[in-house]
Amino acid sequence: MTIAENFKSLDLEITEIARNNGRNPEDVNLIAVSKRQTQDKLRAALDYGHRIFGENRVQEAQEHWAELKADYPDLELHLIGPLQTNKIKDAIALFDVIHTIDREKLARKLGEELKIQNKSMPCLIQVNTGEEPQKAGIPPKDLPDFLHFCRVECLLDIRGLMCIPPIDDPAAVHFAFLKKLASEHDLAQLSMGMSSDYPKAIALGATYIRIGTALFGERDI
Ligand SMILES: *Cc1c(COP(=O)(O)O)cnc(C)c1O
Image (tube, rainbow, N blue to C red; front, side, top):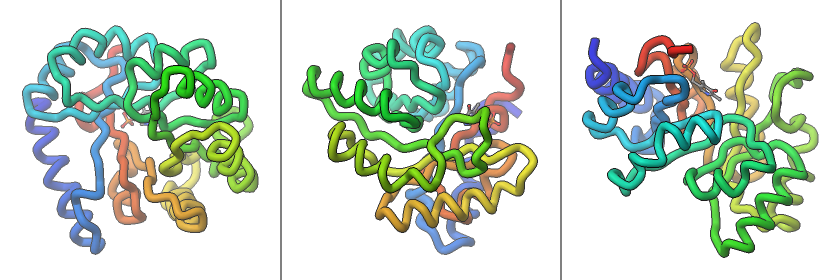
């Protein structure tokens, strides 16, 4: 199948799954994850008409998108990977949404830089739902304090939560848990679901699904 066909069939599938679960398909936003894909494939997605893309590294995202951004003013870029504090300025310049607020130092420095630039940036907090030591994200029990810190001390515009479930666990358990946490804190956005598990994520309330290989094929590197 071509990239355009992949997009078309996924768009149809998202609509169907959303409807079957009593959800409005327009509330499920497809983030096409373009990390480690070729420029030709990104062009094909743009030609199809897709405009929302996700990247997990700031520098690679610049290589992929800095020039294209000028040609496509309606492009929407999401940072879905870890953000180092020395890349905050670059991230603010390039991205429209950051999904990976995961520690106090990052929240504080991002808040400071946004204030200096007089800008605002919709953000999500990454939650380590599986409490895996090697994985980014705040422990679930810290969410109330961290959310308060981000909003009150750092003046960040926190819209929702993001998670990456442990590989060995049923993803649905983590999606349901993230949904519960978001509801408790009145957060509207839920970033969850990748190529292997997006149907469950949509059924359980995802507002952003992050799909790479199911759209673009295997990554290059
Ligand atoms: C790479 C990546 C994805 C996309 O993964 P696929 O399995 O290719 O769909 C989604 N979310 C994050 C955080 C990623 O790093």
